[in-house]
Length: 193
Image (cartoon, rainbow, N blue to C red; front, side):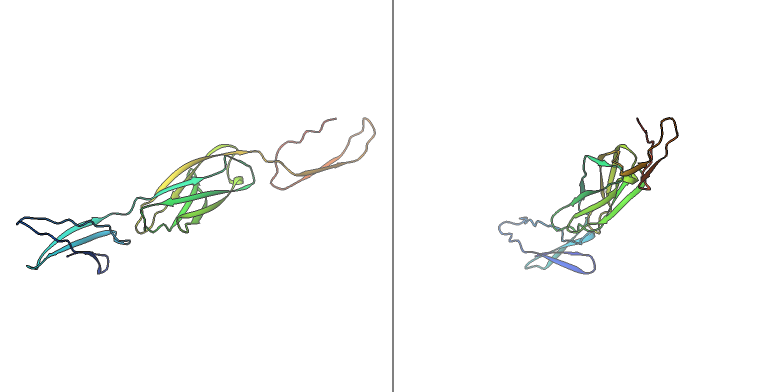
């Protein structure tokens, strides 16, 4: 009979293995570490009918986590866009925790994974124009390692909503044109004849 002892006095029964025949015969147990068994554990094997016990110390490491992200190829400055994040690890691993989206060292947004997935909303107004590299960092969990990935998004100029009004003026006299735009709109206005 074999068991594995881990965590705070938790025990998992590995079952029994029949070994018959000549002296020196051996049996084999396959162990799948239970969820939450990260750290030091002990496999305990008891041989019947003698009752001989062998203990084998083992170290269980975190499951390897991987993170992927999908972003739109192009967004307009000032828009909010979604970045879909997926985390994966061995079956049964705890895929909870935080993901952060960064440009360089600046954190743009964070989200909490639910069932290994999250949608992160990012404001393109936080990004400069042009091709931008975003890094998605998964912090890991109690039994899953951290991971990160990068992706590209191109930030282009958005269309500005504005209104212009003026008055009819005699030729050669100065004209007044009022232009009203959203407060986040900047740039140069060209008036053509």
